[in-house]
Length: 218
Image (tube, rainbow, N blue to C red; front, side, top):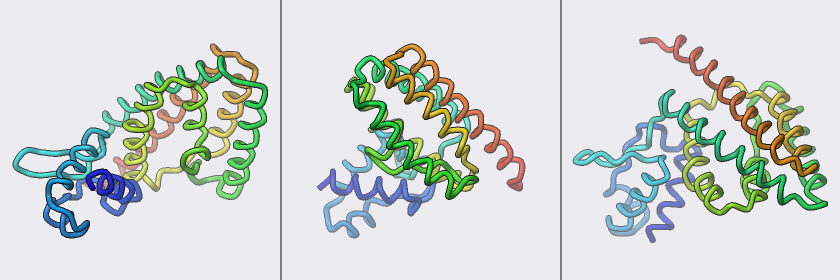
């Protein structure tokens, strides 16, 4: 029951139904999911472990609010883990890796062309370039950290800043270069390009976060 509640709440939080800072009352949630408070408390603790919920003693649980320094730390860890995942993926790439990645990025290209000024949105699982690379890397510890902690927090960050303009074509070009290095089995180049890609994503987000902050009245 706790797992069911946790999955449902995580989905709603990352869809923006519960905005950052929103209170997650145990009693209301228990009534809503028709369970006792025990499974709800366990579910909230699980979400706190992923980094998308904050539990304050004597105050309760709230959706986590990610500030600029939180975002910076997330991107620093992301750069390290995903660069290593790309390096490992290149070392494990088989003959069909290039075609598979090219097909995926072809689908992304159509979507980016349809919304050139929007965010580079990717579907879940096998539709997400970064998730595909992480799985190709074959390191279960890296994959666990990315999927269970880092990616949910990044999704929460996007919920807070859903109006930030995406990099679109630039990010797609960077993805293609990473894919080419992986398909060629060039591990060092794949890792370097992935690290540069994550850094460029952070720099673009940081610049726009600064602009949003200046526009927000005190």
